[in-house]
Length: 295
Image (cartoon, rainbow, N blue to C red):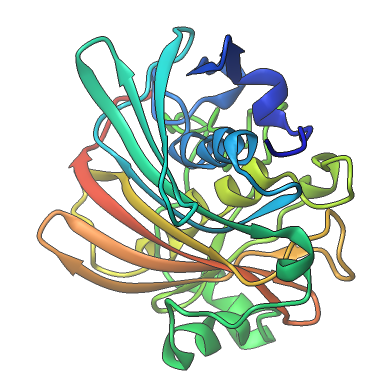
């Protein structure tokens, strides 16, 4: 059985009784109106996986999550857990008869991941544009002030989002902005408030940080109609290193729009330190929906 770890998911979301698990999302973990934040939902799957892993000190190598529908807050949502022969942990979250989330988490020993591992899911053509944005140049930073895009106003339904909501005092308040056509950038100003006991960045926060800050990469392009918004659909994350809570230069979250295919929009986003070292890369698949009314 893995060594217990201390993170925001284990303290506030995961419920364990007699070897069975459930998730309960409190109000601070707001995502779309009435639902939990999709990145937090995906991230907390890693908490359960790390608890049941056979490794003594596991770190997340990969996470694949599929959100089937909105995740309600304030209710116990049972989690079904299956550990495969290869050590990958499959997880399913339900609300009664409704399937909410499916996911798979691959773990490796923390000391192995700390030494650094090459990316296996993304090639140089996906990684280099992300790493190059670790610190946008002056021309890129001027893009947001000169190019029309949807800046979320005070009446936006997402102002209380745990990750990007400017009015969620208990959240990350990650404010992303486009810095070129199809590219966006954000800092993570409150990441240093979320550390695990061994000094790594809280894994749930690391995963959640790679969620909604990718959307401005396509908000500056003619990708969405005026009456469209997006919700997280599938989420694939690969960690190349164990992220410390406070790297030199802080955490940057550069992102890149890939393409739109029907209702699906694909974007890459990286977890990069101030020196341009890549710690994690994710691809978020966004599903278009009618714009929600302000709340």
